[in-house]
Image (cartoon, rainbow, N blue to C red; front, top):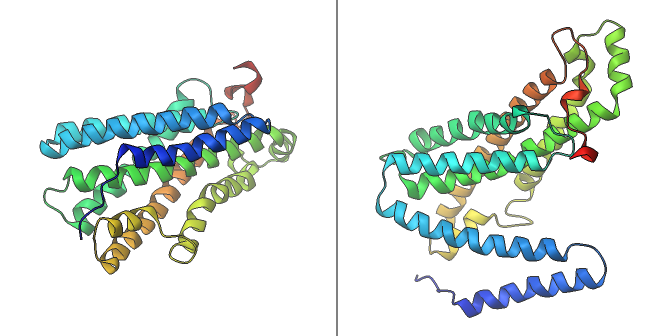
Length: 268
């Protein structure tokens, strides 16, 4: 089965729908017009550049180039996690917390999947490694961003409750335990929903892409099940790591709540 190639005109028709939506939201005064247009331009430019880069990398599969691409993906994902926080940690922590959590979870699970489960040789073959890492980072980024945002927002909102619990003799981690649990739950909701709806409400992107490319449906389903399980594990471990780091950063060595370590959104 051959792939039906898309022409620039085909893509222009799809882009026209986004432009029309941007115009309607502008007419309604929703303030989303610029966001739609900028996101559309960014998507086009970024994906075209990625396509050119991957074409060159696939033709010359050197570990150094793959490592540099993976590092770049991690750094960009770390920036996205930080930018999504209403009350983010000041200094290096604002960026490093999400990046470190994603490195611990996404990179380790991606390497495990490539080397042990899929077992391709060499394990860093870019046709497998880069798309798989991208899916892991993308989903983990969302889970970590939601978890940290919920953690810091509720620590600020329930400051009096936390300090009361501390004054009654609880440790810092006991005083914030309810917020920690809820933050993890919030971070995992999108992934759990995606797993529950896969195949019934929606056909996941990787499976759809493989089927369109001519892969037998059953084989595409096997890969999608693998991806869903790996994404869930990556997001869960990443969110756990981020919450553990964040909840400790909220307190000092004397078990005092230190909200001044968070940036006030009004002063940015």
